[in-house]
Image (cartoon, rainbow, N blue to C red; front, side, top):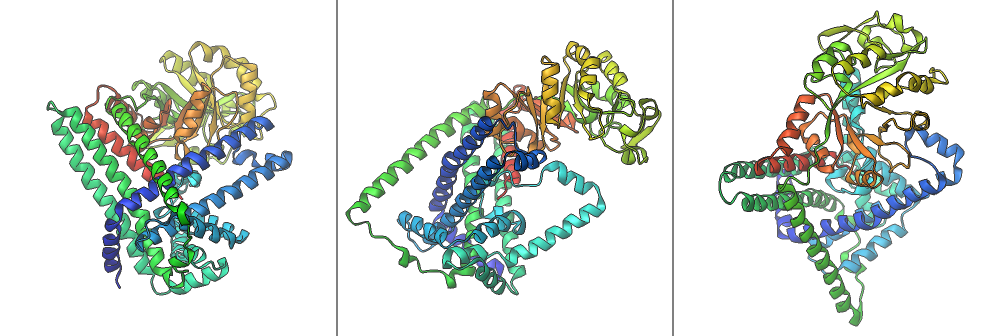
Length: 601
């Protein structure tokens, strides 16, 4: 059977039972989000508060492992429990899809028993393999399992940008994905064999490698068909809705039609979010069904209590659906009234807009300030003579062609150097000159303090002594990747607004910072809600895509840091200054698309 024939048959099966699939994926995601995710988030936050560990990130994992051994062990146990829950979710969905295809729509307890049975035969190696299977080996994992429990397992955007800026790294990245893509396809059936046949990981790997031999192009074509049809259907429906709403905005039924169109959009988005994993599950089942334990063998007899269980289940399901429908109506009204979108501050990243100059230089600052950003974000390093220079990189090689670091040169030596970027050139600026120029332009700054092992022991104290009063007078703000610097700033200059930069969102931190500058890839609504409860702000960086700008606005971020200042200002104005219903729907379409792109296994 060709990939197209299999795809056609799978579509028939999906649309025959589409309501069951929607209910399955919706309820499973809701249960995991409401129970598992909230429980794990609460426990981790409680653990940090009790142990007085301010945050968990890559730069303090070593400290936790060596200085807080008990906490490290507890976190490892929590990770194992999370993996078990994710494995359960995968097994439950796969077994439920199998039962739907077999017409067993009344076997919830049966599926739960099968899931528990698969967990009983799972070894520690199973969960280790499971984690690698989805995070590393299987780049197509999000086709099947989308769970908030692993929504942070992704490559941050700034790392991807770094790899893509270097041709050699780009080639290596492409090669890496080709290799793991091949391995991923060959091991595509491993977990289904483990779950459906109760085989060991080693046996399942051998079976998957055997069953996928000679079928590389079949599976690749199947994945492309599933993803392609989903994207095409969504794009066509969204285009028709946007075009229709643009016209209907001129009529008396503008709001009513916008509500209807928004419901259609949400229905299509939900249907496609179920279509993709259900079709992928069908591929798994088709390839592993020969070895599976028959559905009937797992059946449980409940006797007279069976109807009572069904009534309870139906009541719970109906309650959840009614609650969801009511919440959706309220949310949709809020969207169309423009209440669901925040109006974030627009911050120019490194003082430039769309390459209008050399980053962190005075000419770029003068040009960018004419666009009136709320803040200009810029970077400073300590120099050899314990002064401060405006520079992002820890080495001058990329911008000046000089293999030297700021700490190796005096401020006078640095300010004589010319840097080049984007077809422009300028002299390196001292922080004093940059600050003076910004204040003359009435331009507020967001100053990033760069920290290296070569900084003087009293670097923070020098910064506060020289610049605190000037920064406070002109309402400038500071942020930094270094938590010790955050702590020192809040102790030495408590009135100074200080944001803690987090390149990765593992859990919500417990700090005295006024704000968090968060890498946008892992930023979510839970983080922003936690910050809001603590009266702390959230800045998203670095957001250059319009879709992601809309996503950050829907999340409710307080500020967006971007290299595309004009695009961001236009998007903010379009979305918040008396927007048409068509534009609000377009923003929501962008948010849906950005959310889908950012989802991972």
